[in-house]
Length: 264
Ligand SMILES: Nc1ncnc2c1ncn2[C@@H]1O[C@H](COP(=O)(O)OP(=O)(O)OP(=O)(O)O)[C@@H](O)[C@H]1O
Image (cartoon, rainbow, N blue to C red; front, side, top):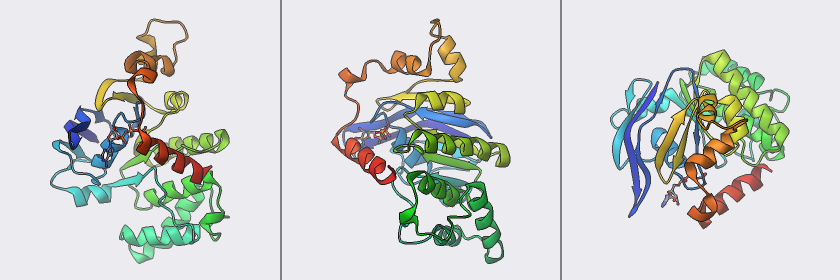
């Protein structure tokens, strides 16, 4: 369903994503993990056609990233880290705008909107202003927006950042159900490794732009040959001590805090 070939992105002298090769099968939940600044969001931005690669390419749903970007946009959904719902509109109105953006024929709009509202548990809140929603409800609305056109591949960039544990676990449950009900292939980034462990079929750990290891969480843990190894242990094993290697700059820190603040 998705394959990258030496996908690379430079910002000036800095190589943010360095020859990344990943393959994701149809219906998989695939986690992109890594410390702050590892290149996860930049990879997702390239795969969602928002940022052109400096070199390399990818195929998504059988489409070529470089030459078929508008077709790819129809085949994918994307929930960015930053806010993608309008607080001055109701949930229903936000969904209506997205259904028009996605060119969903008028006769299907109402049914699709009703379906995603029901799926995300937002029917009762549909006609309330989004600025009065909780952080968890906003995230669920954003996922609802991104699945209106029934995408084959859904990208979620830190879907649970800034949410309390209960709201987080609800979002994860919905992600699981999304795959089960619609067979959607899901590619997500997260810093919650325990959750990635229980949710993702496979993960790739990135550091300094490169994928350092890819695998099934249970196999990665077993490969450490340590009793009760966790995905945290795997992460530390492959990325080293982040206190000595940086771990995010001012721009990332302020962006993450803003995201956490608006959802918190
Ligand atoms: N528009 C940009 N201009 C310049 N540098 C950028 C830009 N976007 C990202 N970078 C840099 O690219 C590197 C990778 O950033 P990216 O946001 O992809 O990391 P990340 O793994 O998603 O981090 P986080 O977990 O904090 O979201 C970082 O060093 C970052 O400062």
